[in-house]
Amino acid sequence: MDKQHFGATEKGMEVSKYTIENTKGMQAVVTDFGAAVVDLLVPDRDGNMVDVSLGYDNVESYNKETTYFGATVGPYANRISDAKIEIDGTVYKLDENDNENNLHSGFSTWAKQVWKVKEHTANKIVFTYQAGHLEQGFPGNITCDVTYEITENNELAISYYAVSDQKTTLNMTNHTYFNLNGCVSGDVLGQELMIKASNYTPVKSSKAIPTGEKAPVEGTPFDFRVAKPIGRDIHADNKQLIYGNGYDHNFVIDKETDGMEKVAEAYAPESGIVMDVWTDCIGIQLYTGNFIEGQIGKNGHKHVKHEGFCLETQYFPNSINEPNFVRPITEANVPYETKTVYAFGTK
Ligand code: BGC
Image (cartoon, rainbow, N blue to C red):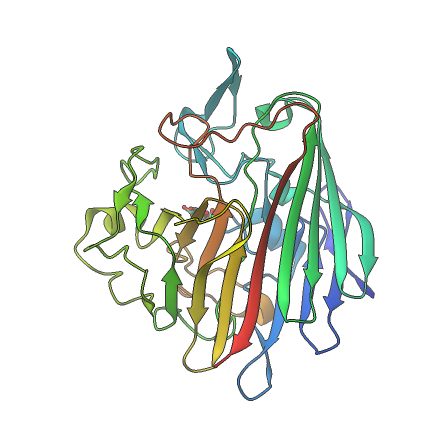
């Protein structure tokens, strides 16, 4: 059970890093700034520990950069059109922090807040954050717990639990950028990916608001139903890939139950590391680090484009405003609960 000083916010709030690990050596270092994953050490096929998560060396970078490395995004991940939502006839205005739209909740997103530690054991940590009514414009006094646990099966399990005293919208995710050859190993385009999705949600323009359609992946670069290298089709002459500057799209998971299911699998042929993604969410955003260019990460490493990929489990982008999508509404005093597991192995 390890706690280390990490730095301080601009306002002088102390920020720490915490280690959680299993008895097999798998380890995560997480910070209370944004309840973010900083390091994630998993064994490669030779048993060497590889840090597969992009991160920063200092709190200033976590605060300043808009990459969301490792962060807990809340209350609402991804985009909301016109930075505006309506719940029971009341319009709530949010920050316009992505053109005229809202991205990852706004300038004071939970990803930029210092969370409290509620519980910390050898393999588990629970962060908690309390948002006031209308904080960033969202209704309700919301209490949120995010639990990270490293299991004996080499899984990083992330559980979200939130309760609001008013009807609100919650759509949380984790924004870790994975690189299964290590976070300083160059781009991930040769790493293989499978996503269990027959449809995805195309966007209207480079501003990335979905059209509302669920379009078949069949015959498009968005077909990941059979594993293929992430980079195989990324440069295809496809309008959606041009809008996204790469993959930056939500997939409609082919769900068979309401519970936890395996929805994606990634594999790096060089390291042999495999990562399975399990979730109870209905959507997953594949973002291939299209806007990473030159950020200075851990150990002073200068990141290159596509040096990590995110698999952000969530409701569909803009689903609070899009009538064709399942609407993420959380009723007053009814818990919002979701879970995602990133399970590691080798082959
Ligand atoms: C979004 C990207 C954005 C990135 C960093 C992703 O979830 O889909 O468009 O650049 O987050 O903010």
